[in-house]
Amino acid sequence: MFNSKFRNIFFTKGGTFAGANKYKACMKKLSELEAGEAGIIHSFEKDELYIKLLEMGCVPGEPVKVVQVAPLGDPISIEVSGYHLSLRLSEADSIIVTPEI
Image (tube, rainbow, N blue to C red; front, side, top):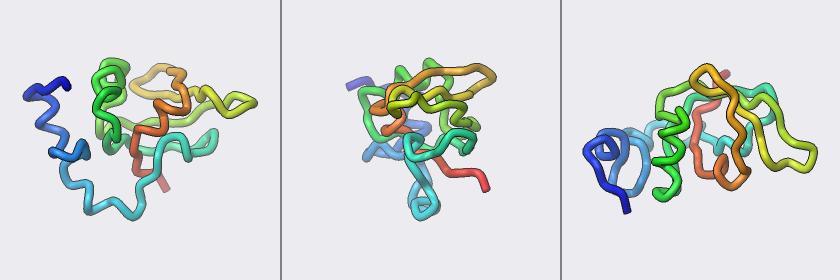
């Protein structure tokens, strides 16, 4: 498992973003958002994916919008950090977001 100072800034031992308990009731997985819905990235569930997601611009606190969902539901296209990114549903399932109202 990758362990760095950067990771310890954003995450607690359980792999959740610091302060997650405050907002737990209104959080969703990115895979649960419909096309056109937006949110703010809060945390990641799977440690093995978080480095890959960070490198692609999925940083906690970054706004994200679901642009398109494929006809069979997988993959989905999101807009994050000013560009479009396609994610497998399993990858989007590990990203916790706070939906924008």
